[in-house]
Length: 95
Image (tube, rainbow, N blue to C red):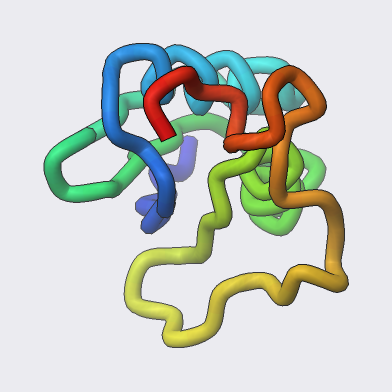
């Protein structure tokens, strides 16, 4: 089992934590998701059979741009949608 630490932008409340957790738990190989809201980090444990890029892509598609912790570049806006169709602000009511 691997544990990956992601830096995630746009999380500001418990609703954001739920959206991020739900987006990641839908991915095959994800066993556990722990969100550190104050630090903007998400720890993901599992086998990640589909690769780490799927984790970043799922979060970005949910409106929460993400990157591996320690990596200096975020995915570009051209790489996929960055807002949730739900309300246009990352899927959270408080943005």
